[in-house]
Image 1 (tube, helix red, strand yellow):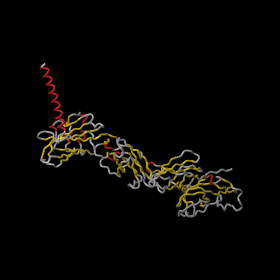
Image 2 (tube, rainbow, N blue to C red; image 1 turned 180 degrees about the vertical axis):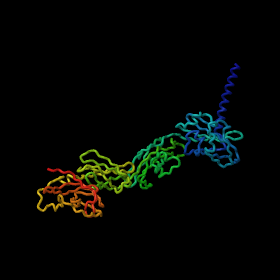
Image 3 (tube, rainbow, N blue to C red; image 1 turned 45 degrees about the vertical axis):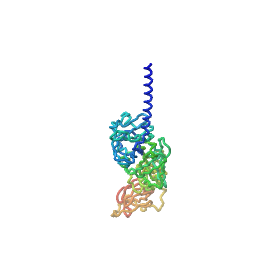
Image 4 (cartoon, one colour; image 1 turned 135 degrees about the horizontal axis):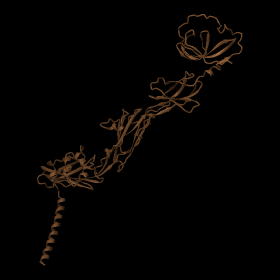
Amino acid sequence: MNFYKHIRYFVAFLILFYISSINTTVAQTNLNYPIKISPVIYPPFPTSIQFLNNAITPSIYITITNKSSNASVQNVLLGVTIQSNIFNAQTRSINNTLPFTLFGNSPLQLSNLDFASLYNFSNLSGITLAQYTSSFPQTTITYGFVLYDAVTKLQMSDMSNYKVTFAINNPPILNGPLNKSVIIERGVQNILFQWQPRQSTVTGAVQYTLQIIRLLDTTINPQLAFTGSPKFFFEDSTTANTFNYNAFNPPLLSNQLYAWRVQAKAIDNGGFTSTTFSNNGYTNVESFKYVAECKAPTQLAGSDIATTNATITWASFTNNQTFTLAYKPQSSSTWIDMPIPSNTLNNTFNLNRLTEGTNYNVKITGLCFGGLRAESVAYNFKTTSISDSVKALVTPTTTPSTSISAATIKASCGSKPVITPIAQTNLATLADNDTFTAGDYSIVVSSARGSAGTFSGTGITDVWLNGKVFKLNVTFQNVRINADKKLVSGSINLVSANYQ
């Protein structure tokens, strides 16, 4: 009986001791510690505990103040904690804390760079190596700070906590201008840059920075232009997901290649919400070409049109434009392309290997920066034909009139010609219907081309035979004619003769 009575007394004692212990613990947590810690966190927000250990930019600041009225020099030890829904990391032991010295009531401000060693994995417990090196989970992260007396190891401050809602977001997606697109310069500058946000934050919580670079080397990957210390052609920020690049911004230069990207950054709102972006918030790099309007060549014309060749001319109203020519017989559906050398002067091209007496279509295409093309309207012409210019190769006339005689046509069988010296001065020009002599024959010019004494073309000459005059078609190629309109060198060729 006494045994059970003693047991009851012992249990009652344990219960009273437990209640007393609880009350003592509660009292400890409500103690008015002499030192106060005030933490705050600014962007760039930490993304992992390892990030804090290796950080080179301050983001966490704590202000330590001795509240005691008779404060003097005091050595303290700083400990930290970091909590999430999957780990509870804290300073491993009092031996892993970091010492600091407080001087009276003067506040001491420290950044995470000052106590980065506390976030070394070897100084922490309650976390695995994988959790230490990985990004924080997307949840609330609680940062804690506490001080101990360096001599007595007694707690000297409350556990001061600072909470950040951590979220990892992808950078925006660029929507326009489309990658590798061509923007044609038309009057007042007005280009709309657009991107699609992908973070789950309220409107206005993120700032977007538009960055544009002019690529002097058009062969490089535009992504490389943003490496190192890039020189931006333009940079500006907005909280909207569009930017209207207009006449108030620096004018884009014509016929240039530009690269652009956007960086998303969280706007600090007191540190209670953090939006962290992968790739430091940078989007992919895209490019566009800004080009002057590509105008089609105009005023096509033909000159020196002969039996097998013609000279084509045109006018251009776009700077730095190159050209290609295409031609075809009018009866054909297939165009024949002829590249025109870029050093062609005066927008002129000699078209050869044509067929006589044929109708042709020709067009000029202007090639501009950025791959733009502008095609002219077709120009029509017809090559000359010997049979057309002279109605018959050999056309006998009616019975010659009495006025026509051997003396008239200066031909007499069996007579010995009188040879006189031939002048060597070159004839300047030879026009249609002009007449020049070749020996005893007079050639009436039907068509001619050339200058400075050297000419090519077609003509008609009279031949007297058996009391009749025959008109024969002839051609001449690169013959030399002097100022007296006499043939000096070369040959006159009979085209053909049909005697009936």
